[in-house]
Length: 161
Image 1 (spheres, helix red, strand yellow):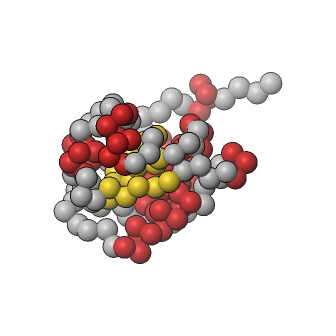
Image 2 (cartoon, rainbow, N blue to C red):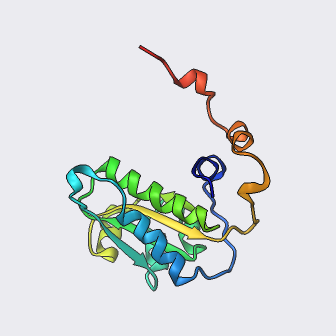
């Protein structure tokens, strides 16, 4: 998939189909996080794949339903700082979308419990799954996806100095 098309057509999704994500796709998603650029290449993160503890982790995020319905839950843990966590998460979510898997980032409501479950400080929980209502990025050009996004117009966001 064209990278700009992937970015323009990606939407956070919270309703997932009851379809297992193949292990090779999971590995690619996790590897996309590993390959993320990060401050001084310190790689101060760990990816915790939440399997049996999914119900417990669901209680620690702001929207438990996102975790409970997901087919893959990844907690980004460790000492990574905000920008590095964001870059890592975006890599994973765009890689997933390139494989037809949708995703959603989930903020942590109960940091202490999340850390206890995952064995390290949890920075962000990502949920993944095939979309409950299939969408095809190729169904329209990237420019049309961009125009349909509920975002401020570029002209309101860009200044030149």
